[in-house]
Length: 516
Image: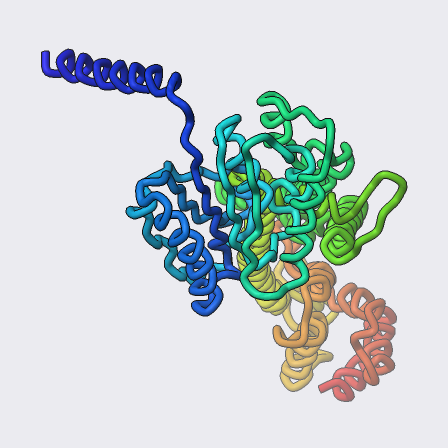
């Protein structure tokens, strides 16, 4: 109910205002004085601002001397940024001259000066009513900020019952040129100014006058930057994917290696191969990205610091269009357009660095585990080598030629041709023969896996076997002779073998004596 009552009150208020306007429309229009006071950054100095107010006060005193209730509008105009350069100026409503007071306070901001917009807005609001317009300014209009003042004056002046005058603050030649524009516009003859013409002129801007390439050069440069960021990000993304893939393969095969030791050789070979992975260069993407980035930087510098003109293309106009968009409501979308691919590029670069670090860690851990496995295998292999080497000493060496069979019996007894001393010397020579069969002793610190495996294979030729636990001395001497392990005693061992073959007891005793 309250909302309905409020709605009725609002409608009634608007109805009364509309009725008053209809009644006032039939009354003769009173001449209004408009003060358009420049409040831009160049007017921020207190001295200049005071001069401007002094000019207003002088004129205002003359008006009040004639009629204190004469309608006066006092408008302070400026543009906080380039976005507002394209906006019309809000003209203050007229008040009695006696009530018109100073409102401008020095702000210290570097605001823009839309002189053309101020004049166009005032003329548009005045319409066909009689009025005096006083423009108080130092004449420093910001380049490319809204409508050009002289162009507006040419389009909208002269008009019946409208007087426009420049009240300069200082003696700047620029202010004099503004006054000249107004004077020349007043001298034009035969021009008919309509409301439609005023509206068209007010909405006209540099954007409408600029060519297609001048309008969108900034967007072209932006797209190049986005493309460069996209290529950089894509390249790093592919590199990160490679590292992540190989890290996963290494970890997966490490897990399988623990559960399937029977495939250890193949799995360890694959892990070693993947750990040595080298990322693809992708030089094409790299140089493409750098080329796009350098091109965008060069074009940006060209746009910002050069003033070239090619046929109908003006670089200064293209620059102005860029600033216009940056200071407009599109600036947020523009920021998102540029920042998004840049963020993508940085995120993919971070992902690639993380994946690279993870791969290095996983590959390093796999290398450590492989080294531990190799040490364990080497230790087990060396133990096998020592075991096989010791087993050689268990081989039985037969010397039947030292025994004789008893007549009619199978039992044997030592031959009377060999004394106990000879037999003792024979046992010592046998032990030396088995020690030679063990081969040179390999030290774990100086040996390698292949060397130990080869030594085991050689020594196993002289170790006892399940079905062959004994050998004759002659067989052992011949087998060792092929290895060259006898060294400088090779002749003595060969002499013993020959004496045994000939069953020459004196020669055998002599050879045993030489070897003992």
